[in-house]
Length: 119
Picture 1 (tube, rainbow, N blue to C red):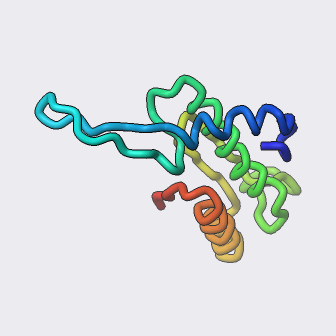
Picture 2: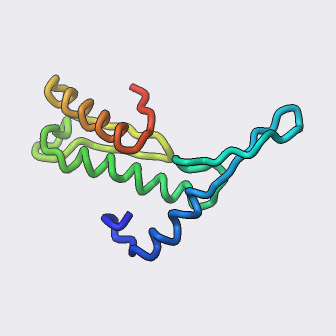
């Protein structure tokens, strides 16, 4: 988060909030034991959509800054990356080397973030 311009005090303040999160499973109207959530963004938390946008933006930047892929119509332009909520559409020139490069970037992103990618 500090790389994105957030102050260290903000990161120190937000970290414990997410690391101390707890959930319980409701089964037939009866809550189960409390479970400590160790990673990920939690649905229902009002700040989660904003934090997810910060993570999704990293994928967009990785693709645009790579240089090994191109826009299908505009010479010299990076691929088109369209994002809405938790969906991402990537439009690039149909070249095998570009597709392999994109797959490598997406795999690196998935490994770094823990997000699952659907192809």
